Image (cartoon, rainbow, N blue to C red; front, side, top):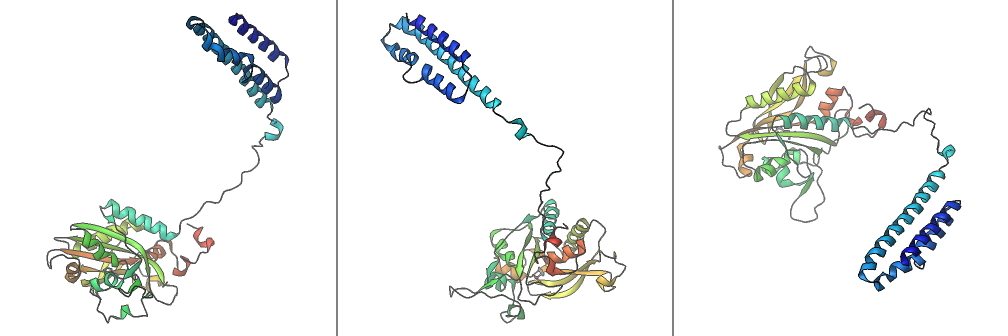
Length: 344
Ligand code: PHE
């Protein structure tokens, strides 16, 4: 009885679905009529529980299969309908229209230089260390053996921050050397690190100076590190950075945190050492400060006096970018002029 009923419902459905012109509403009506909550068909499924186990199995299977078939036909029709509703004329794409050019961002040359420095040094086994830009007097000056009355602490060079805690005096770090002792307090030699970062000086801005600029520090410490190691690492770095032969020249200088201290120069990359207006016909470019780490700095970090040796240097990244990309005004880097940045 039930079996026949199901089969006739199916037949009825197939006839009906064959006749209609499918539209969303008609399909919805059909679905409701044959599979809706109040449909005869669902009624049969609901009443399965009143049948004998034998019948329940047989009828249940047939009813479920038929239900799936009906469902499938309806969704097939729905899909056809959807496909048919695409207005190809409207959706047509003219592939011959020239594309809109999307603007691609550019990296500031300082970022390019920093990335390259990091690549070269990490390939030589250096780690990259980091530290705060807002620093206390302790790490920026005291532990670096900068005398209390040193002119560098003066209002002329240092941005002092308003004292809010009454505990420590804060500054915008004047160099990346502030990270030296911070790092050494947490690490035991041997190690080799670079510290790239932003530094600040209370200075008038001119073509060679900015109040905010980037430095990168190098610090190499071990039992037997010498100035020869420094010279070799520096030469290797500059040759890779400028992709040509470079010489490094040291001149005696003074920094409280290194002893002995040097200023150091590299071959002028504009004239390759022959002499030109950029290097004042000397064939050399002044690059930065360096030296052998003063034992007082090691002591401040908690190392025993005489146990280790090391070298440190600090350069301005702007200076390197100017030489590499032949830029003649340091103010361009942070000026925000896109005509400048777009060239990189
Ligand atoms: N910190 C020094 C400066 O900013 C540079 C320097 C670093 C010199 C490390 C020697 C050793 O001028």
